Image 1 (cartoon, rainbow, N blue to C red):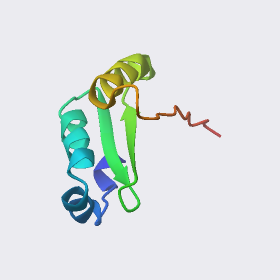
Image 2: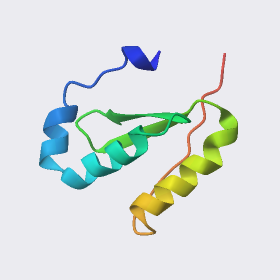
Image 3: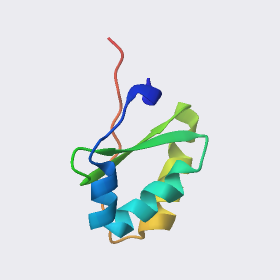
Image 4: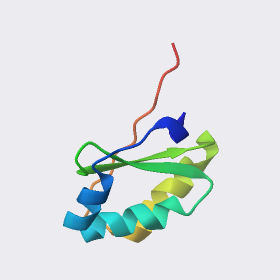
Length: 79
């Protein structure tokens, strides 16, 4: 599924907001999750490939963003 998800605005958003691009690149190098920029670049979504890796995602985001950034966990509920 994630190979089909593409955001045409990602390059322009990365150019306008280099810190967001830095976080995207740092997260994108880990095979435990998939990271994508949403919409016009105001949000990154990080989807762990295995639910057991949620804590690893939280730790990595904390390392990259520090305590001055807000993160939220969302869960998909299969129907």
